[in-house]
Length: 617
Image 1 (cartoon, rainbow, N blue to C red):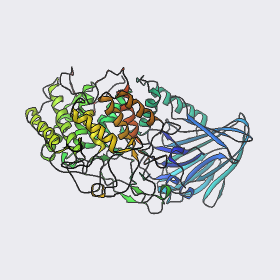
Image 2: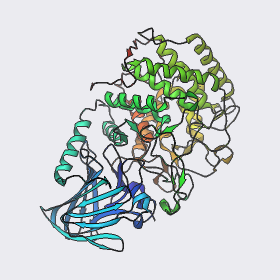
Image 3: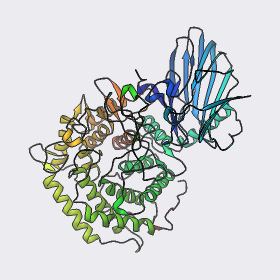
């Protein structure tokens, strides 16, 4: 059996990420960036596919936590003979990805074991390993790893092992650095110093958080997770650091999430603004605009961390998958979603109302996208969930088309510069036409709910976004009945499914999946919008209870198995948590995404340059 996802903690350095288990096995690390080939891939196979185990040799119990306001992980292992602490982090101030593991004796004496299996390209490449006076070097093709430690290492059966004893007060360091094989490795640095500087860096970032609501700890952990999933060189944010963790154990819904989803764009911007992280929000907006620049008819739902568009989907047949769930995929072939236009327009509007300047080039791009949507909004698409069944007129896609025109109108109406203009009368007419069509063909009176697609009776949790984006006010009786229908008909032991995934006619796959945690947080926000505060708080508290011991969520939760499933940790879930916590906060005063722009005192000013910068606060 594979290690449960709850047993993993995240390490990050804003370039890549690693997962380390409670037992001390680092089972996933892609280098040199999130979508690079994994040098440890035991997460999707066995130890032979790469891992770095550092743990007591004798039976032990483990208690772990992140350091306060940090992504530095501490795990205390208690044995019959003593207690040790293993401190893990990905260093944040090194030239390339650098894993630091520091073993410290707390009490008695503990015999430790090390099992290091280095495999490049997702476990398929065995490197050439050579000893060095301070450790060893492994090289294969473009990749190099340099492990520095005072511990005596021994090689056997294409792996590296060691045994050593740690007594109270002693520290034993391990520093594993990735480097391009055609360049020399960086000069050695103190493991304790790297831990200290990394911890200081995370604490300095967290100290700037401006959110002080009742769920601050959960919100801050979600924001720290979000910044861990940020590719610092560009500002892009990946949906998750993993690939092919299944949405149901043994199923085939195994997708690569190490890319940047436009579906999450507005929620990402809002979450960063909730925390007061304006620099990060501005950099993310600029990444979005750069990524989509080009032919407006060729928008994608996801891009690489630098804005790459070609993300070919391949199967890695040598990996058995997490708990035998195959296939294992890298790349992602999902496409054909019209809701992207609405997300982009909302990002432009929400950032403008937050005071970010809107330069002429960015607005020209926005206008081109809206002009493309004018001729495309009537087309069927694959919907927000990227289903691989027949294309349909998905209601959520039409609602987001309405958002695209609504927000573009708002930008023009609130401009402070004549260079930001557009045919608002025509846009209003299209916006009203979309609204009327959705209300006519997307609402099923017999189900008393907006449905998944036009002229249908299937439900979809994406309908919860209708009041949250301002398409209809929360007071509209159709909104309340839709929220109640989703809550009652798509629930799984109190949580929410996206839709009935067993319906192969829609889905194209027809397999069960777990409760979708972002949608469950959407239900919290939707219930709050209609005044059902007690139920909203109760659901939020239950959702907090399914995070793992260090506050991390996957994409879904399998109630039958009582465990997290899907890629982990999932940015979408953490974003939805921040959004729901924001709505539950009675002191919250900043305009929400759902608030209509009419009557707001917003003055949108033009900036200068497509990559306009923003100073810290």
